[in-house]
Amino acid sequence: MDLDTFVNRFESLYRDTYLHAVRRIVDKRARLSPEATGFLLHLVATGPVSLAELARHTGRAQSTLSEMVASLTGKGLLEVDPDPDDRRHHLVWLSQAGRDRLAEALRVLDGARLAEGAAALDAAERAVLIDLLARMVASLQHRGARDE
Image (tube, rainbow, N blue to C red; front, side):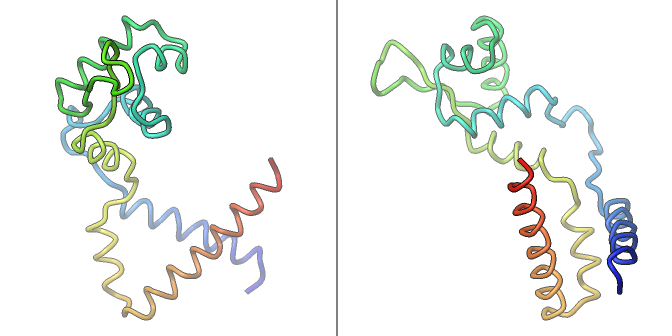
C-alpha cells in the first residue's frame, strides 16, 4: 500500500473508531469543567503547592484560587495539608478521588466499546495492532521533537 492510500485509509478508520467508541457522558453535571480540569492538570505537573505559588504560576488572585480550592476540596477532589517545612502555610494536592476524576475526564474513548471491537481480534492480533500503533506514535513524537 502506498503512503497516500495508507494516510487516507488510516484517517478514515481513525475517525470511524472515534465515532463508534467515543466516551459519552450521560450526566453533564458529573463532568469536570475545562477550568477544573486545567487546574488539576497543573497540580499534577507541579506536585503539592501553596496557594501563593499557584497564584504566581497562574497569574490569578489568591482569593480566586482559594474559592476554587475550597470548591474542589468540598467535592473531595483536593486535599489541603500543612506544609511540613512551614506549618503556617498549606499545600494543595489532588486526593485519590481527584486523580481518579481527572483520569476519567481525560479519557477520550469508551473502554467497554473498545473491548467489544477488540474482541473480534485474537490476543496475538491485538498485540500486533498495539505494537504497530506504538511504533507509529513514537515516530510521530520523534518527528515532533525535531520540528520544535
